Each structure stands twice: as structure tokens, then as C-alpha cells.
Image (cartoon, rainbow, N blue to C red; front, side):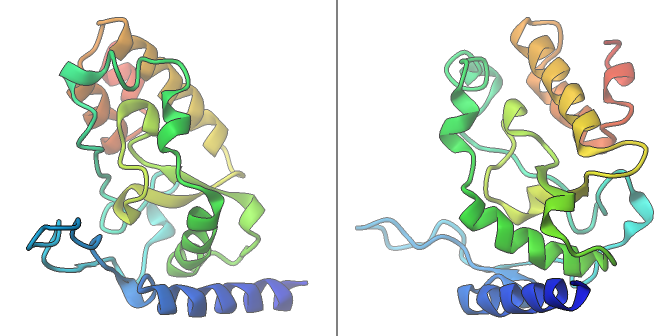
Length: 189
């Protein structure tokens, strides 16, 4: 069974290499029709190896977080505070599963079973995290003392506080990106 899982990771890594995501690089999106420049002129390099030493947090050099530019304090009433909005920006598993397999390998997890991890947004979609940016996604274990489910409840409480005007979007993003395990207490929630 472990051999099959490892072969799956290798096969996914080969697929990612073809797509330009393996070997730690991701290409910027192509320029829009009629534009003379791409949205980012250089490719960005992801860390080649990520440390498990930060768990239950991601390695900050691999996953520093990234924001969706469409979500600002001024737009929360049309974006994150609208019921169901996150489903309009959530990336499909056809994107996140290959990335999850690549990142499981980068983290050196012995357990390579994809279902044992949530491909998590460090800055959650509920707070305007970048949906597809690999700098904002990481394979968060579903096991251990502080799991993906624990972080989900923190995300929901922060979104409620932001939409209720008790906390600014910037403060909530900063707190969760720094350390989701202390975010609520740092903000007095």
C-alpha cells in the first residue's frame, strides 16, 4: 500500500513538472488579451524543502500566506461577508490535489495518503486569502492535537468578527497568518 502511495506522489510530481509547478516553480498567469505585459514578469520560486518543525503551523518559508486582491476592508460587504461567496473562489480539487501531493513530498511527510491532509489556505478564503497561490496553500495534517478542523473553527470566528465590525480585516489576516493557534486570544475574541 505504501509503495502505491509513493508511486502516486511520484506520478503527480511528474504531472506537476509538466505543468510548471514541480521543482519549486510556478509560472505567472499569461497576460490578458491585448495586454503587452504579464501580470508578473518573473516566476516565483517555492522552497525546495519544508520543515515539519513548525507543526501545527506551516513552515513560513514555504507558506508565508497571500491575499486575494479583490478582498479589502472596503469590499467585505460584497465578498467574504456574503453567504456562499467562498464557493465562488474555491479552487477545484483538480488543482489542489496535485499541489497537495507535491507539498506532502516537500514537507517530507512519511504518510503520503492525500486524504490524511487538508490542502489548507493559511489565510483562509473566509478572510480573503489567495485561492490558488501556492504561497497560501499547504498540506495541513488531519491528525495530531491541533488539526485542520481546529483551524476551521478559528477561521469561522474570525470571519464573524470581521463581518460584525469587531475586528478589521487586516488584523484578522495578520493574526491567523502569524499563528492560527493564538489568533483569537491575540485579538481578544
